[in-house]
Length: 118
Image (cartoon, rainbow, N blue to C red; front, side, top):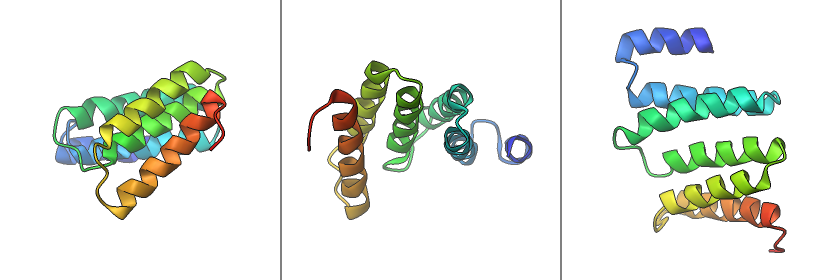
């Protein structure tokens, strides 16, 4: 996956939204593999690229959600809550069914780290 990102950076530019999405996907894969510190690094690259342009609605929320999950898996509920809150804030009014579902999922994650029953 890292080789694919390197090739894509040469093809479309290192600051392309496509590359930002590639780093998000890498972060998700690393989280799934339990490599949370590396996942945070990939998510951070994704965030940097995506915030420099105009991300698709919900794109930053998925990055921040991934960061929250990585912190939660590492046992830092405070940092996890911070990133879940950033994810929710980035969704704005969440005016589509997909974004509304994303908001509900992130709210459930946030409630879980805060110990608040839904």
